[in-house]
Length: 345
Image (cartoon, rainbow, N blue to C red; front, side, top):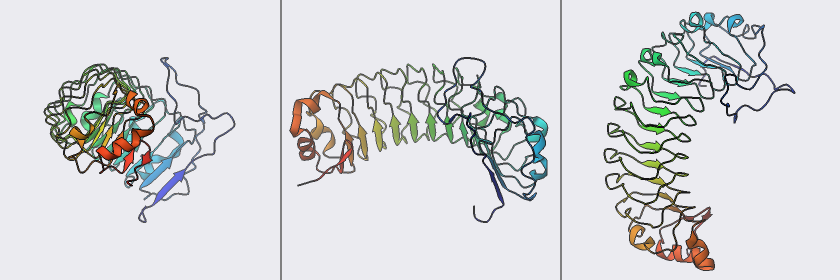
């Protein structure tokens, strides 16, 4: 870490510990049980007060009371408390970390943030993924330097609480929640990445103000139509796999797209993408495309195109042994077809 004082503590798992990295909390008030040490003895006593980074990962912590973290307050810039059993954030402890830039609370038992983070005006990255939050904390308004925030796999049903951090926020991750509507994003004028996969969204809407958006991820939702993207002229990556999209359309103004993922939808035809002149990757696997007609007309002129996925479409079975060869003849610029490198003979 470039010579910066760093403390890393990761206790070995006990026989009763479970792998929580891929845990998905069920709809109950309690998360799966993890061992939390009540005494939480000060195993940081040997680290100097000017330590800038603390990583207390899978340390079976339920409380921070006995760690004397306050002695690091003047120098601490990064604090990771991933995969513990913390349920409450003590304002008296966290309010001291005015120099903190990154806070990682991934995979704990936090239901509410309260005012614990209100003094962290230098915080740029906050990860509260895999917790028990039911809403975006309103107190984000105090985090005037926040650029990246993760709320993956909580119980959030509505996008709120982000209006006051629009000037600084660059990346917002809300995947794996219960969100039904894209809304309340108008002030996020500098947002570059929006991750909303695995929610319950049915429509692309209310994205017009995100003029600087480069990545939009909406996999595993219930979207049936590509629409509402007219204002996203800087968009470079669009992920819509595992939805119900029925037509390849609505991308007329998104000429900077480099990656387009529409795998596992209901697209019946390759069309309306010949203008994507810098396209590099096209994922159309698992759709309803019956033949390879339109392949050359739509894509041959796109010299940047390197990868295409068309497997698990009816056209793969229909073409049989000629499937790959026909694609290569139509698109000689390709370096990869499905999961295999293309070999030009």
